[in-house]
Length: 367
Image (cartoon, rainbow, N blue to C red; front, side, top):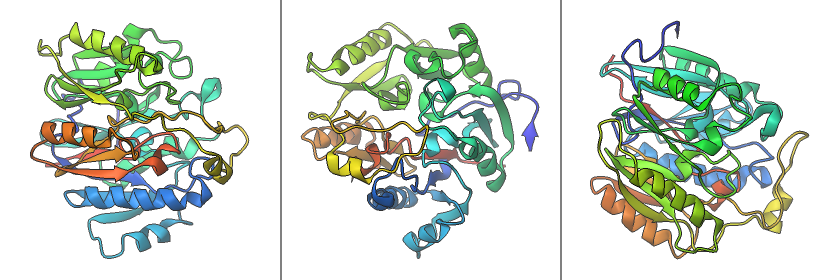
């Protein structure tokens, strides 16, 4: 059912990702302009991610009628992965799926407007209607009431919540001209607090270098506990990411959360070697008119911050880089009661995002 109220009016709020889940939503990767060579490698790693998540929570894998049989075959025998026939334009469940809010008993979804990360201004593809309809369809399939936030444009990867009133965002994303250009920073802050049940929004200046989402926060900074975050970091002053991360650190060190607590910031290194598109990968894409294209040598926004927290694990991207193990060790210490699943994720990042981007948690429901 579509609701005419707002989450704050109904005393609902966005929980932290490390709170208990009912399950997780993912979308089968098939878009030729995102996943080279018919997504063969992407489907393999999506299966690995989904399998790891399904060890401790349900997982719904969306696909259209043409590809639902692939999902059924890939997860045959895994009763915790549920195929769900809902068509989308691409596989970024974090951004097109519902943002969920809770009141201690029930879970409801928020359906933001989706415009492919910038619409006519700087969006990444020209047709996104099915993506924009996905959140509502998911809520209907999972029998959740929904708040319709249209025409406010927002993607799930652009917000992070501590579940206690604090939201993290980046200025580069939420203030970009392709989202809500007629709204001021204060107006956007008010809208986020209204729909996420928050009392404070912390605006980080930027995200990960060359992130085509206008630098989503989930690629640069994430909550690992109350007043505790990981921040993507490099000590290499010649890397453009150094100044970007330093500016974020300056904000975090001079801010407090909604409860007045100072932040503990854990520096999580980015890969030592930049992850770039190869000639072989480029030949495997099939771009349509109006779609953002890639180039050989293009630096991708690879970050270990783009992990997913499941009920029993932390699923962490790996890049065959010397910092892979460093990231696993740091996150293992921050989540001592969860199993760390290191998964080689180059075949996700070539699509433009990573493990957090392809997942969207559904909180526990006691309705």
